Length: 99
Image (cartoon, rainbow, N blue to C red; front, top):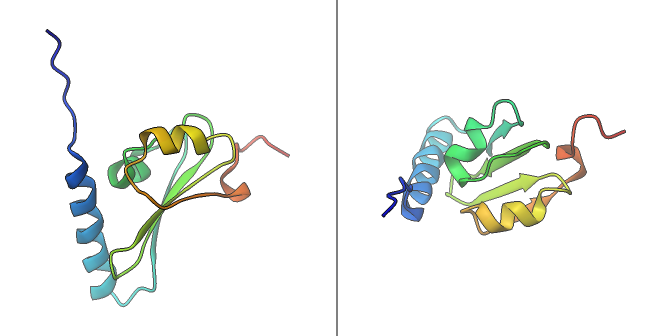
């Protein structure tokens, strides 16, 4: 039998709520973290999704609302692996060598 370490879905929601409180305490309108294929920790920490060749971001409001932002080639992968229900595909997050 293989044992896999898995972060439970509720942990991602708790992380978002803690970040939302920090955003509210600092008076921010929104907190955005970004990641790329070389340094994916920020987006993955909040969403469980890591970009393989595009960029990704997570936007968190002080009220605790969150959205995952991905490039056009990552949208299906993000829906399959991301833990945030709201997901947006944005050209600004496309692969960096894309003209």
